[in-house]
Image (cartoon, rainbow, N blue to C red; front, side):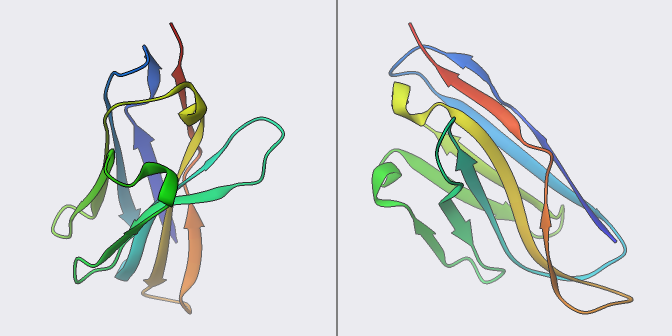
Length: 120
């Protein structure tokens, strides 16, 4: 199986920055796409940003120019640098991976979520 462990959430003032990290572990044959989703109270979970193993990335329109996703394949870790944070960025952020374990087919894997709160 594949486990994803997130870190880096917290409380930040508007205009501030945070960096989220997510490390994958377990019996992993290949990790294809890694990314971040978020879910605010009363809203559906939405894609924030994702990056392929080759380094191609895509972003939600609401975060373009403010957030940067990056990935260290050797460490099986994905990062989300969040700058110019706004109150509307407040949500639980979930790490996601589309990965293939050594024993089993490709599947979606999720972290436990980390709270990001943007407030003065």
